[in-house]
Length: 319
Image (cartoon, rainbow, N blue to C red; front, side, top):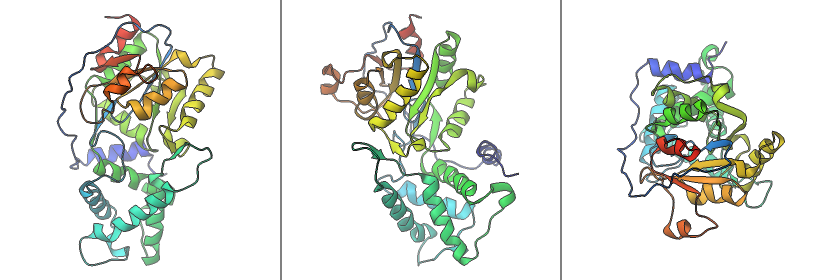
C-alpha cells in the first residue's frame, strides 16, 4: 500500500534533509486590544502567516524574485530523478522546467469561476501532474508501491517542492493557544488559503511545539475550510458564505464566529462583511497587511488586535 501524505512527511523528516528556514521575526509596533469579546463560540484560524510563520509572509507559488522557485525546482528534479526524462535545454535543470511550471500555473489561474468576484486558486497537484505526465514521454518511472498512482505521486512531489519553496514553522505559542481554547471548550476551525498538503504541514509544525491533542476534538469538522476544496482563494466571498452556511446548519450564527488573521484586506474585511467578528494578528512585519485608514474605518476595522497568540484567551475573559 502506498504511503499516505503524513507517512511521506515523516519519511522526509527521518532523512534529516536540509530545508529553507523562515527569516528572523521583525516585530511591529502595535498596541493590543484584547478585552473580552462577547458571544464568540467558534474561532476560525488562518494558517499561513497566523498559526504558521512562512517565508514571504503568505502562501505563494510564484514568488518574486524567482530564486526560491529556481532552487525548489532544482531540488525537486534531483529528488525524483526527473532529469533524464525531461526535454532538456542548455543550462541547469530548473531552466528546462520553470517555463512549464509558470505556464501551467498561469493557465490554471485563468480558469473560469462560478461566481463573479471569486478568485481562482490553482491546484499545485494539478500543475505537477501535468509536468510529470510529460516525463512519461521519455520512459520516466517511479516507485509506485511507495508513492502510489500518478495523482498520489504528484501530491507528494508537490509537498516536497513546496517545503523547498517556502519555509514554514509554527508561530511561537501556536500550539499553546490552540490548547488554551480547547481547555475552555471553545470550538476551533480553519479558514485559510492552502493546498491538499497544508494540513500535513500544520500538524508537523505544531508537533514541534509539543504533543497535539486529538484533532477531532480540537478542530470542528464543519469549521474547517481550506481554499483548495473549492479551487478559489481569499477574498472570494464564496469561501466565507460556504463556511457560514455549514455552521448555520449546526446552529451557529455568523456573529458567533471569530476569524483571526494577519491580513485585513483579503481575510478579515470579507469576514466582517458577512457578519463574523474579526481579530487582526500584528505579530511581525512579514505577512502583515493593514493600513491606518482600514483601522479607522468602522466597516473594515477589526474587533480586536493581537500582538501575540497567547492573548487569544483574553478575548474570553481569561487573563
